[in-house]
Image (cartoon, rainbow, N blue to C red):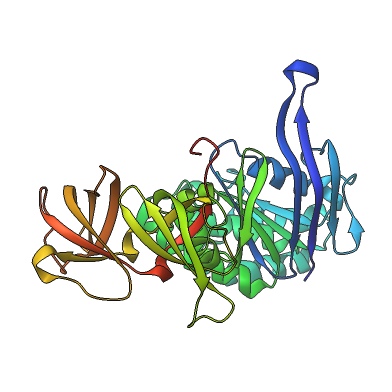
Length: 373
């Protein structure tokens, strides 16, 4: 297993007034054997970064190190990387076995050994029984497995995956997440995976780098990024999020969480309490983030009680999804607010008056966007 270091990588296309910056100042440390995800919207630079790692694109500045080796100037064939592409890129005229043997053959591996190697990798992805078929005779999921087997047969130090599940239907894509993660982790290879699918990244990654406009927005484990996003972009990109702008009224030491603070915030919908790991100055402008599923919902006659703030709300629209119900409500002051509750818990309907109980532990304090002073 080998580590991967991305040091101050930048990529600019063109010069002068027509220059377009694709990446700027990207620094990453990827651990040996880690399944690392590059996540972000289209055009954020994640695929450009993956191709720079592979050697298919030359960076404008910065270095790429694999272990102790600086590979920035090396061609792809000298980097010991293998890539699984979005469209799998299997040779249509070759059998499954010959596709998997192709990489070792190009490296001069003897016939007997590459035949054995292909068998091992196909068995790993449960495709050995299809070794004599052509790619056109396989389903999308089967082709995806063959593409992974071909990449692993090259015995790479770094495995690169460019949205390999995006061409599969939703049900098969969900099934393949666990399967692909298990394959990659059992191989022991260090892997970098590009996707714009938040659920895919959350379900599969050891750590995620969220990218926006050519820069890193935040790096962390899936739960950390979801529960404690470092900014509004990450909070909004990783699932549904409600934002309430406000001003800090008071800050006091939290008696329960040693080293933490209990913060009282005035918002347009009412006062809101939140926990913070760092002290915030009274009078500061902040944004409060609350996930829709982290809200306790009661009909008004139930009179909720608990350690938290209660907001009256009116349901504007509601959607039943089987396992859950989603609704958009209106808080005092006209602020829209999304909620999600288990499907059988209550029947939400337009015009229904409800109470929302928001616990301080479920409120994340973010810096206010510059456009919302």
